[in-house]
Length: 294
Image (cartoon, rainbow, N blue to C red; front, side, top):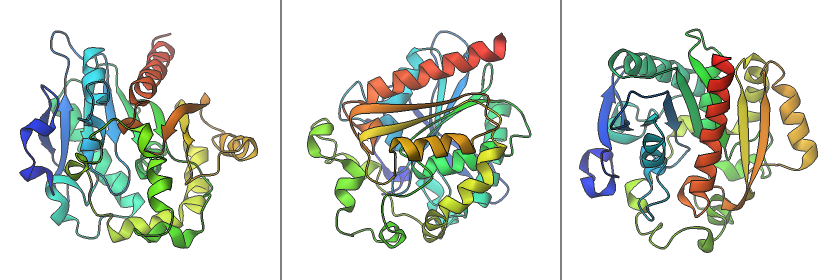
């Protein structure tokens, strides 16, 4: 189901759908801005594979939505639909490779900056495959207005065989993606039709190549990075040795923080741990703002 036919009741109060112009095709998204004051900064939320922008506006519990929380704390929050997802999914029938997605995202964010208040700058908050896009985009931050990166559910070395990445019905896939029913509010899975979308073919190609692609972009990152791994994360290796190797490759970042989120599965932003995770993400944004202003 695409965003163009979803009911407005699937959105938090004040959230509106927007379209951003790019050279190839528009990009859709969900936006919530502060009500009573200019935005201190803009949080750009980038979803993972197989879901869309609604991932960041979960409706199963009032505490889950990143958009609602961020706006209450004074930030504009834009959840973008990556190419191949959302209202204009049919414009990108195969999706895009990561390098092309990064170019599309940069164009979309340029359009967003020209028409909306972004305060002190933009902060990329991304999940899973969206984290790959966020890193690829930040590796070529020519505009210089990215404040930082906050990524959950993404590492640099898989804990599964590459063949398992491309099989949507493979053994153990549901458990790796969700981590257990009890980690999510009742109703989460009944409401999932608003956010679940097929994963475009081009994404599957780059998913398998990510360990090599990561090594090509990691050293180019020049902004603070925070990485979060859920307690029940099964897609990625996140033992101490793997994390030390990951951090060492982000050698140009002025600060790299690695956190673990207890009582959470891979889809942190939809679970009971969502508010805790989102508050920690915004605290990291506060650190980035203080660093920029200092």
